[in-house]
Image (cartoon, rainbow, N blue to C red; front, side, top):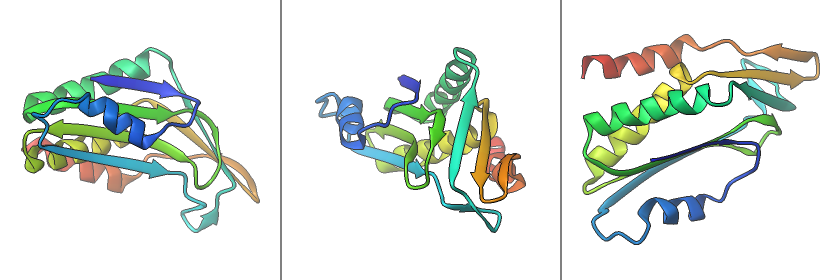
Length: 151
């Protein structure tokens, strides 16, 4: 498992090659790449700044991945989450998981992303034409993550 929280952009292809590391037992890889949108809640977004607590954030993300590994037979997992100032269209997060079969890979990737949105300690500030504002957690993200509690 590799967890990185960084300011630098990332190469999705390189991350997937690193995830597989030449191992032929990986029959399925599921990945998710998230990007900064240029709008949110009906308003224009010109920039997004993500803040975190170094160390604490990585441990929190590591716990999410460990929970996914306990639920599904994963062979590898990796997460890269950017922090600092970002512009619309830039990559913000990458989640990759591999397993012998697609069902586990798809489910685990979705689980990790749902829990990143609700459990990882990141704070988002959007900047737009009317100034900046802190972004509150979305109820829809909490509801979506809640579906994993009954499984």
